[in-house]
Image (tube, rainbow, N blue to C red; front, side, top):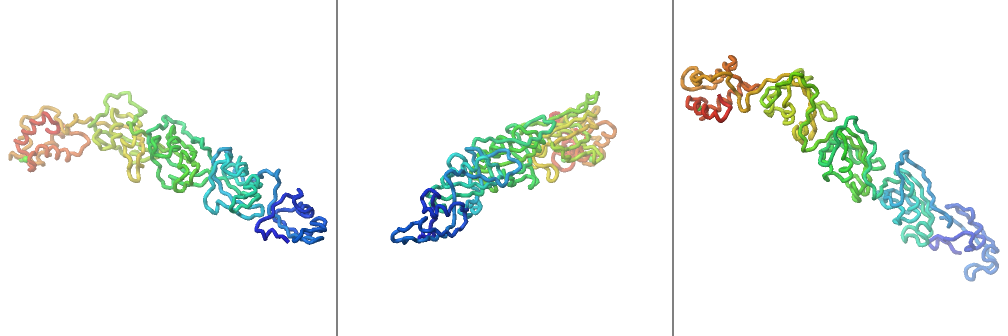
Length: 502
Ligand SMILES: [Ca+2]
Ligand SMILES: [Ca+2]
């Protein structure tokens, strides 16, 4: 007797083609894979009265224990059975697409011969151009990301008579249980979807702009790999300068502040065949972004006047003392700060660095009663660092301003000016006890009197003590805390060139 088990391989044969004894040809008809039949074949349907010399005696009745392992027909084609299809299927596999998929490969009898799941790594390949066995090249066509299929491949569309020389024997039908994870074509550019553009969009991002945005990054199968929201911090970058992956550099162009869009990036414009971190090689990336703000490093402040009083002749200038109300917010509308909530105005000397540079610029040439909006880029605001807990780094600021009061400042460089003629005996007047020396107290008292009687005027908006001390220190050339007539005289001569003294 001859057991196929003894040979360690299956017996592979076409049924009904005369390759078998007649009895076996009949017995195998109608069998299923994994079915086992005990077959008894009389001699007239086997080897007859002669038998096979040395192996089968004449008139022998033959008994076979048959287990059907595999079954196919030359007219078979690849069979595809989809058992899960996602609701959304914007695109299906075409010839020359590149795909990433997981699979279990079994024989018809259910024996597993290979599994990408076990290797914990997707199978990544081009489809339809001969990188795969023909049956797989066919079986993957038309599939969507997320779809699950059973692809059954007859041996002549798989590894044929010889098998693959390893796990797969000759003439084996193969069954692949496939789930498609990723799909793109090397000719793909980025795609932009789900755009939500705010109604008012005066400006769109260009190369060189600096953008702050939030994003969720997922793979095509929905796996989240990164999110700026989870870090509670926007992603901040220049656009179009190669600071981000090529697809992102492109996808961030032409956006408005407040815009939302989905940017789909093929791997050659993303992290390529290598991938990075949680991103597998050759992965398509899906970024859902929300633009918080953007600016250009060359931006100055932008001023929009909403109301100008009809009488608008006195315009604010450097050195003026201003009282104003403001609401400060971010471009996305987040309120940062408001004088209205404090119930009092904000007061500054314009151009003296008491506010950020952009604000000093934005408050120029304004008249009392005027209302304007000043947009300040971060380099004229709080810069890359922002203000801890209040202003995000690199944020564009929006100030809605109303000027309530303006006290004209002194000419630039002056801290005190006389309203009338200067007394010829100035030093003697200041030196009240006539000991030939002026102390700070004497000096301070004298200035205060001049201001009170309207004979002189101090720069508005500054601390009186501070101004007086500055003026006094200026006069006290040797720094001994006393000003002599000689020191005073020297200073008086120099004052023709400089300004910040009496
Ligand atoms: Ca004195
Ligand atoms: Ca002195």
